[in-house]
Length: 327
Image 1 (cartoon, rainbow, N blue to C red):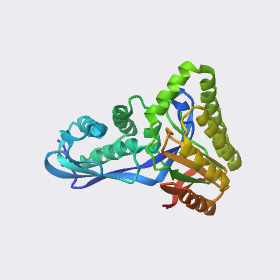
Image 2: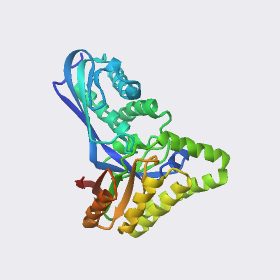
Image 3: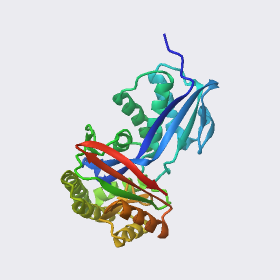
Image 4: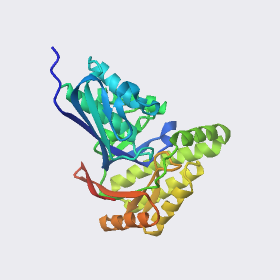
């Protein structure tokens, strides 16, 4: 006998950042991703007679009339209901998100994760990690075609992760807390175009492109060691070198390069784009909390659309993520 739905059910998920390894991860190289707690998404489900109603900042109306560009959300809702042996009706869903879309911050994966969690809660069903990832992967496949899987792994983890395609993600050992500043260029990144351009280069300029991909994989391994040793100077240097390879791959642009330069001139230990590139966000490694705040202010003065800074640390291998502030 099926239990009656909850009167109110909430599911949530945080954003994510790729510390190092973006794009190379598509070709089997490792990447390190971080939970980004400063921005998040919440899905609220309540009983409602008739077809599913969706309320959000990007669409309000019946699920079956959702715009094409949002069909990934509809797919996620329908597939989750199917998994739960429930009909996709009798409820309304309100999605609230502070994650800017198209910035390489895992917005679509976070929304799908919140949606799945809220529906399982609404229908009083336990949710396993495997079922969650399976359903989020369906939504991500609809939205992105052939996702590497790093976004859904990162938005469902509260700790930094080591990710390799088609393998289970693992937690990354961190000896010393560090401060990350995120600056939004204000421009939607074109991940699809960036990925496609690298694919073409992989065919036509094979040696040079393969070298950059392999270099990013090597830098990711160096970053893992630097985090384990608590060597933040080395980590900053790694981020700078990773940015150089991303420039060679053609996924950076003038706006990103400018903010990276601003970060370095303001004393950041390292700075690079994060995510797909060609717009979106950059990250900078600060020396400490006060420096992080100063970097965030410097980015805003330099024209960044918005900034955030937060700390990721560990205490005897217990991972914690603490938001310092957001702008």
